[in-house]
Amino acid sequence: MKQLQIIILTLLLLASPSIIYTNSINTLSQGATLQNKDTLSANNQTPEHSDDDFAPGLLFFALFALGCICVFVGTGIMLTLIAALMFIGLAALGVLSTSLIVMLHKKSFEKGFKTFIVLGCSFAGFFALALLFPFVNYITHWATFERAVLTGATIGTVSGFVAGQIVFTIVRRLALYLKNGFERI
Image 1 (cartoon, rainbow, N blue to C red):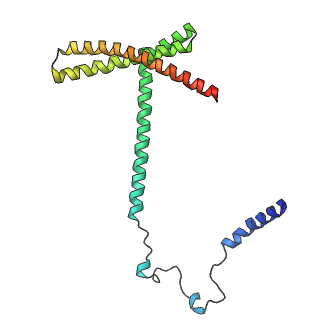
Image 2 (image 1 turned 30 degrees about the horizontal axis):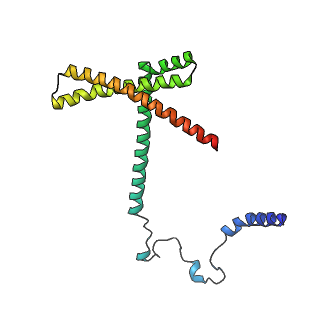
Image 3 (image 1 turned 180 degrees about the vertical axis):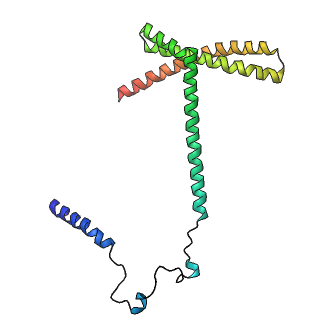
């Protein structure tokens, strides 16, 4: 049975070029009128059957798709640049090297990761609030510019440290939950 199927498939594959290139109209019943007629000229087409393939809907769809592709590619490029700049900034500030040194000295990936998270959040809070407080002070006129920058930097560092501790605790508990969930499976 399997040999018969192979033979039939082979015959179909061999016969497919001849099926494709055969004439689809009945050549025996054609009269002399069709032999002299040019089938490719544009003069024998009716006005409602013109050969104009202009489709504005397809053009707008293609432009919309091209615009979406450009937006997504641009977003990907921007996210990549932001991530690269963040890693360069963390390396310049010493966060990456410090967490690597802590990890190697304590021989614990967890302690190195905790150092990375806490220092990263502390620096992020420092810069965010050191820039935000002078802006808020410009609007509300609470204190001088220097005092606003110092207050923002201090509060940002402390809140970043606390946020880093909380984020590390959440990540550690989530990792343990996922680890226990996968061990049950």
